[in-house]
Length: 269
Image 1 (cartoon, helix red, strand yellow):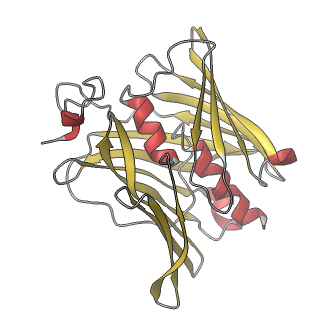
Image 2 (cartoon, rainbow, N blue to C red):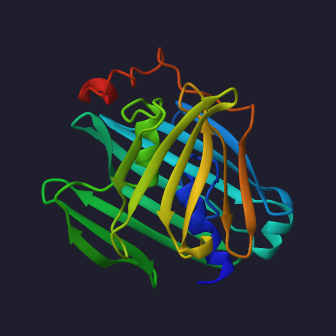
C-alpha cells in the first residue's frame, strides 16, 4: 500500500475522535441544517495545518441520522497527495438503544482518480454487503453474515457523543467489533484519567499504516464527549496531531432530544 493510500486509512480510524477529516472525495451532503458541525485542523509531521476538516451530524427523514467526516488537504500535503479531499459518511438508525449503521460510505479522490464504496447493513437478514464503484457502475464485491452487528467509526463516535457509550469513567475498557473486511478487527477503547485539559482516551487497532502494524491513538475529550485533540504516528509520515477549532457548532439538547438515555424514540421526529 502506498504512502498516499496509507494516510486516509489511518484518518478514518482517527475519525473516531473526528479530528482527522478523511482525505477522501467530496460527497453530496444531504440538505438541511447541521445539528452539530465541529471543525478541526491537523498537523502532519513538520507540515502544520496540513488538513482542514469538519464533523457533521444531520437528521434525515423519519428516525434516521446522517454523520460525516469531511475534509481536504492543505498546502504542501495537498500538492504531494494530488489534492486529496473527501468524505466518510454513515446513515444511522436507532436499534436497541444505540445508533447502528444502515449504509457506511467511503468516497475518495486525488488528481483525476475517484473511488467509491459503500457497506450496506441488513438487520433482518443479518448481512453486510460491500459495493464498489467500478467501470461506471456499482458492483457487489463482498458479503458476510453476522450474529452481533458490527459498527463503523462514525456510528461508534456518535454513540459516544450522544451518551449511548460512556467514556466518562477512568479505568474502563470498551471493545467493539468493526466492519470485518478484509478480515475481522476489534476496536479497543481505554478510558484514562481526567486531567485539566480533558479526559484521556486511547484507541487500539491494527493497520499496516501504523508503525509495527499496531498502534494507539491518544486523544482528549471534554465533559460533553467532544474530542479536542488526538495524536498518533503513521509510517513515513511521523506524528499526526489533530486539534479542534473554535468556530464549530455544538449539538443542543434543547434542539433535538438525542440524549434521552438511549431510547428508540430519541431519533424520531
